[in-house]
Length: 251
Image 1 (tube, rainbow, N blue to C red):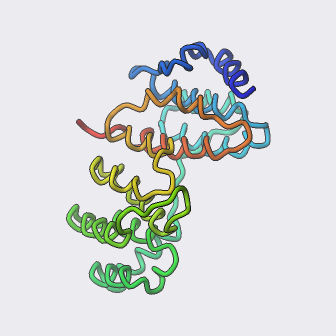
Image 2: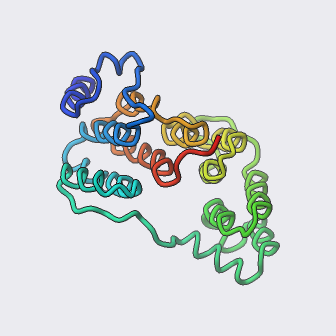
């Protein structure tokens, strides 16, 4: 039933036929990739019940806003019957904690307390350290923090999903994000092995930012759509958002 709904959504959106999708052929090209990838994401969202579509609509429009394409933003706002949104911003809890710690004692103190796990690192240590890395004034300092994070995460543990260390999975997630931001494929692949869901589309899209082309994932975005759970669309938006906002890594 789900495949029929997706096929209908594809026909309405004007993308390639479902038979091409089933063969793994991507309808997205380099020339129209942004528009096509956004269309694929909303095709995945379109099979959700209306109340669940509403839950992902705002996140979707934030990603559209990150294109800074006024025409595209207006078009999607019209299609989804929603006011245009500005790109998301603001300082979160982890960033505020990292800023406060660095103001108090500098990098040595920051890393000492992080390794010891003392307050505030007893809650959200991976996230606070990741924000610390983003605040680093030099690449060497950022790398110093990232190396400490890998050390604290340890080698990948056995087990599937969350049948493993919660903190290691959290370290893996934020380290994958930092590595994606740094265009560091070696660190990225190392970090993803620590996560709870290394095969997720979120990480596939982040990896594609480094390697240079997300368009082959368009078919997977549609094929793995879930008609009851919003997590698929949310993960895809989290994965494709950095490509929209940051662009692809240089060759």
